[in-house]
Amino acid sequence: MADLDEIIHQPLRLRIMAALNALPATTGLEFARLKKLTGATDGNLGAHIETLAKAGYVSVEKAFVGKKPQTTVTATAAGRGAFARHVATLQEIIIAGKPQA
Figure 1: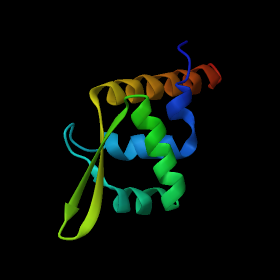
Figure 2: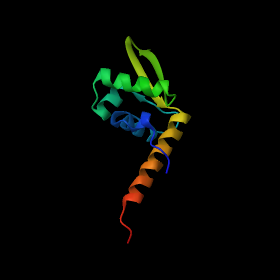
Figure 3: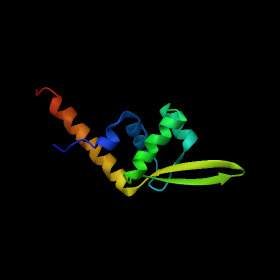
């Protein structure tokens, strides 16, 4: 059985990666939308996005729309692969824990 990915396994980072992986490969989510989806505070969400970015699991694009800053977070190919492996490991754990018929 493979090991769980400690970067993704943290609950908020898992929610972030799940939200991003539900989108097409090159599509990201705005910070405000991720905040709403995860229920995180600005600072907490920012710190977890930074952790994911340092691991190469997400890319962060900052732009201005009008005069307002806009941050968009997108799962990278490496992040999508890591998330898929993490989910597969969780599925293995669930299956291994089921009583045999």
